[in-house]
Image (tube, rainbow, N blue to C red):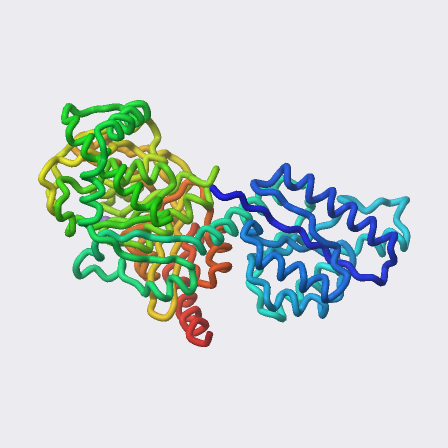
Length: 488
Ligand code: MN
């Protein structure tokens, strides 16, 4: 994970005289240092902004810096916003306006006009807010006392979304084979995706992978087998099938790393020269932070990698998922999610088992090895990126995962069970109304607010289905959004 930092730019003006400006700078430095300790990425104090040229210069530097993942601004005093126009108009980095105040309380005895002149965030931040609105800037606004834990949490979440944007801008996706024949929702405009999201999506021949696989040595496979058996319970005697998955994983990883790709897709319809669909191989690659999408789904592959990077330690509990089947018993309605093989073990409740089973779909000469487990219980979400023609739409639904209500002993794949918000059928009506795909990224640690932030930064449409959603309200929202996006 690349090291990112954020820059703290504090608004002021020369009117106040050197003494006030010195105090502002000292406090801003103190705040950045203290916040750095509470946030997932360092916040570097850069400037007490007093002029157009200073602001333009720091924003040029932010745009140019690979390490700067975003800027956080705040106005300790009043900072006339015309001097921010030139800088903000060409800002290319994510922007968060932190509306805060150095002091938590109004000091009853101490307060006088000097105090008022120094501590003017209440109107300084409003002037700053106006120019953001006037410029139609896609910014995040977070208000609250800067030492408050809730503010830390929201700032930290926004930082992760901004890092998700930085990762997105560098995303390369390796495709083995095309999309599954005739499937619509996994298609999309790769040129549009690169313009908006920065994703470089290109294809490599399955034959290249097969050649790379044949070059993998027994010693390399032994080493990966040792890792598999340390992390997972070996629950099959077909060691050759497991070793074959290790061979696939090593070859795929070599090709991904050689091309700087953080995500890949393949399809069971194009495994020419391979004995097994990569199952365990794809799962263990996802556990290392690589994105994956089945059936040629490059959009979900890249989104998986971006959301993993946004999560804890840059490889959070997010993985490729597919809605499979429902339990429609009244009062106990659940979705069962899984995939043919490729469910990420970062979603597992316990230690996954390596099993081998026949796969009745596609070309598979041998029974592919895969990890089988139950997903964790807890709050989560599913996210689906679809191409609406002319724009991308990110559909996000809140879900509550549960321990599967039955053991399903004959199901040979990893499984996750959840209750969609607001409830299964209303949530389903909303999802279908919005056009969300059967493929999603399921995440336990990226929030809907973070994905909204990410979508805003990337300038794509965002649709959220939560506890208050209804198909009627959503239909109206989508009609308005259709119009808005056509006007752009
Ligand atoms: Mn699928």
